[in-house]
Image 1 (spheres, rainbow, N blue to C red):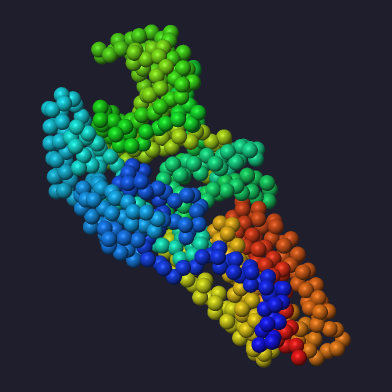
Image 2: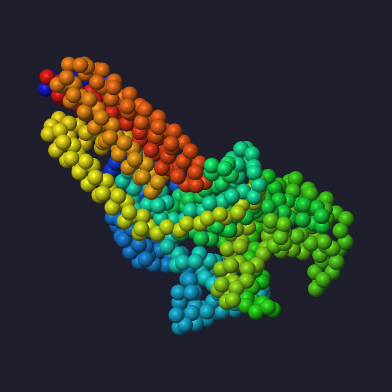
Length: 582
């Protein structure tokens, strides 16, 4: 008991216990894994309308909102959630209870035509034709009835909407397994897409920060929240942007990332407005003012295939509206198909390529109008493909209008797509192998020294070191990927080596009077500090090597060996000294 008190009162042991406690607080281990975590919310979905919001980008896993029940039915995991959502009927009131709030929403059924067989497709087509015919008769207007990609069946006829989500509507919530700690799994462990981008020209630090901020905003607007966007360099000083989208295979964002997104609307040689909040403070993305253009719809193309036209509303700033008024005040009025248009068109340019051109009504001549409508199109071999491409183009254009252009064009250097199943399997194997390795090493140490007073403290010290590393990674928001795990292995390996040096010197101090205990420990730490600085110098270049892809390995190794040298190994020396000292 006396030795235990001396150990617990030792300042080096107290420091270890403090760091260990802080690490556990940062990790926040939990044994309650019931429910599913909200990963992101689909724009204009039932969940979005109910007020459920996306988690903040890079928020700690344990801070995410967890769905506990749906209609008072307990959710145990992903299987329960998927089964309940699949069984929800049309126009049903659904009550979702989370760990933060309770929400009420109404289900909407959106039918994906690609998943229907021929009989089902014929039935839904006839239903839409009846609705369109009734709408045309009662309103004396015309809607192109060939717009059949997806159909929102429950909408009232006077508000007929044709929308697209790509899947059968599942209330618009994307979920993942409920987290049990704050350790962030990186791309290699939970799957996803990694894109390495290179600027076409060298840019300043200020422009690089602007570039990263704009890219994060674009991806968030696009509906992606679980992501990492950071600057990277190689040993030659070349600049790169590393984008990691974890937990999802998001092939469609690659073009969004690489495009500079310089949007301009011109009348003649005059730029009326460009993308970004300065000129375009509001962009409509809801179904009532965005989607397939009901006045045009989809139709056969002269070059074969089909073309679908989209439209959405935007609000201009007063300055942009004034520029439009100035650019149109001297234009001539032309009469075309019983409609009055101005002699110049509003030309939409994206990355200096013409996206579309719009006729300007004569009533807008010289008027500073702030509410206008943007349109464009998409083509495909089939009508369904054309509608999908049209809506994808619309979403990309909306995103660029909201976020503005990037300071420089980016080129895609490399793209990696990693399977979530592979990452999950690797994590389980790594944990088992790591635990087995620690036990084998401790067993060998016991056989070497034949002292339980050495083997147990070494095991406790090694585990404490790993826990503190994970705690610091959780605190700073660093993702645990393959490189980081390799860094932990290096840190633990060097740690065991240093602990053996300390043990040898300490045990020699028992039998030799040439040096006292403190001198023996000092001699051991001289060797340990020399090895520490050697490792530190070797790791610093790796933070930039491979365009920063080895940064996780270098940072984790530096954190690990630093914790060992300044916290865990001094505590181990104090514990062993007290246990072995006669």
